[in-house]
Image (tube, rainbow, N blue to C red; front, top):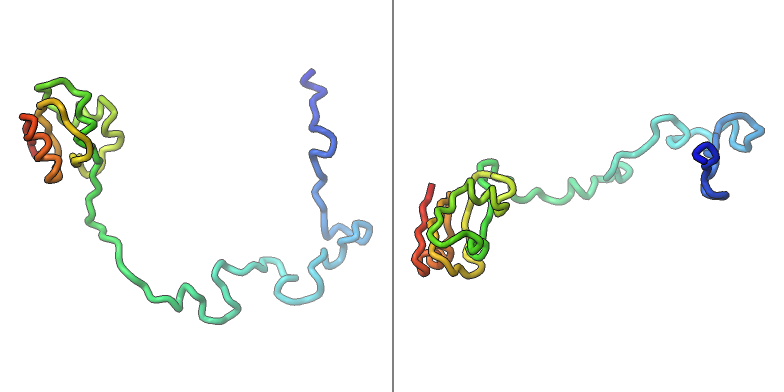
Length: 145
């Protein structure tokens, strides 16, 4: 019955309640000792603190930067375009519907991995050199948006 469910014997432990009088064995100073930093409330050191010594994170020089104007493209390989029928116009909407593009970012870039067996008309934001060559080699066309 649901009302008789309980954890297996030995599976649970009582929380040790420190600072609750002399009978607990951890009364008065609550196992913190006398005086000093660690006996006070709020005593914890921030990550990277090295006791006043210049921390490692500040001793090492800063390098590089993050380009805030970088555009990240959703990537589709030429080999993945084989699922479309010959002569189809493959645009962004068809790529999203078929699941080739899961998350639209700054656009779609077609890369040259894999082999294309059908001539199709591909519409995307960017094409790599090899992708363009492979699409045009089988009679397809590339259109840049």
